[in-house]
Figure 1 (cartoon, rainbow, N blue to C red):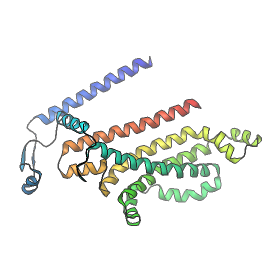
Figure 2: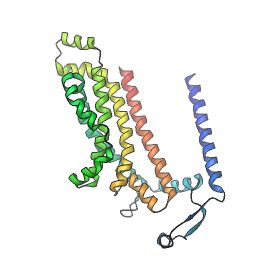
Figure 3: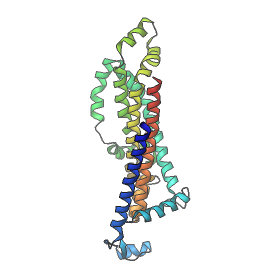
Figure 4: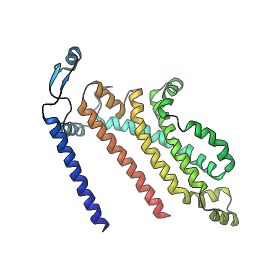
Length: 279
């Protein structure tokens, strides 16, 4: 029964995708608006000032360009001309590093907050003050103090990843059944053994929920951060291609960002289901 539902869902998804692509292709195939460029800028790009076709590319144009990128994803022709594989690799490296640092802080601190009502009340004002601040608002301060755009981007990822993990960890630890903790005390396990043997397994699904939320936010924020700091990365690639008026490459970058984000989310979802089943 479940397999039949999955098959039906896949068929509907494919049908919706085909309908969307057909509608997109039909919409851009007519005599759409022409793209007018500044004459000097057009000369610099090697184009005519007025393009005779629609400014918006169709799915066939995007597909053909995407195949070109996939044939050579790791080429490197200089600072402003690198393959999408290199751009994605730089973005992923920044995300994973900032995300990993956030885990090292958020999970232990979340345990402390969840296990200690005193620390929960003491730290709550700071959390409530810092949590609503947009991660990108930290970028100017990071650039000024760190003086390195790559490290500043990693710091921003760290900031945006901390809060979902911290709050979910604290909530998961605080809501562990009290009778389990009382049994651990009766057996004289001690604080550390109780934390690792009783509280961590019980709170693991909630902790992983926070980690799953954080990885999605981190991947979202890195695109905006790289637009600000420049250099290399999929966010910078989007901005650079927009400056070159290559809407086709912008669409391809958006598609790749979505696909990578989906893969990251699915990896965390699988880990979350594995931990839930193990419990």
